[in-house]
Amino acid sequence: MKPISITIETPKGSNHKYDYDPELKCFKLKKILPAGMVFPFDFGFIPGTRGGDGDPLDVMVISEISTFPGCIIDCRIIGAFKAQQTGRDGKTIRNDRFFAVPEVSQFFKDVNDIKDISQDIINQLENFFKNYTAQAGTKFEVLEKVGAAAAGKMIH
Image 1 (tube, rainbow, N blue to C red):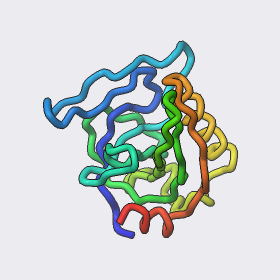
Image 2 (image 1 turned 90 degrees about the horizontal axis):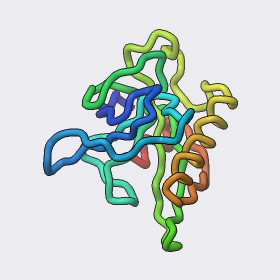
Image 3 (image 1 turned 180 degrees about the horizontal axis):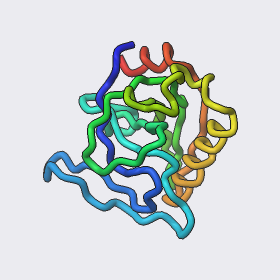
Image 4 (image 1 turned 60 degrees about the vertical axis):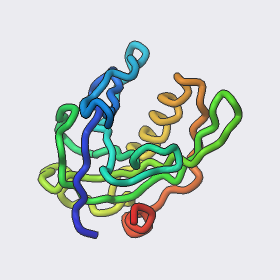
């Protein structure tokens, strides 16, 4: 799969969640995470896509760098969590999470599939999403972990 441009909403290390507002054509502060909770990597979306929640597909960019809201990064998709979220109202929707590595990364230059990432990092990412969504009263459940090829098919 050829590289995909990812738009970063929330930088690595931030305890502020930003969202792109297409009507205003800028980034808005959406929420502040609890003390001690931060995004483990840059978090953003794939422009021109739409997930089960109606928003563009979510992507965690696994990298040694931290960028800024609005930064565009050319990345290779390495895998995904097929996931669902159940809200306070009991409604369940698909809300998959994709994982990518920047083409310019030095530390992760040999990572081409989610299986190339340590299981500890994968577990931490799953726990991050569970804890992050729990703050909004939502339950996040990973249905399946898929590699680069399957994730690419999900996007297209």
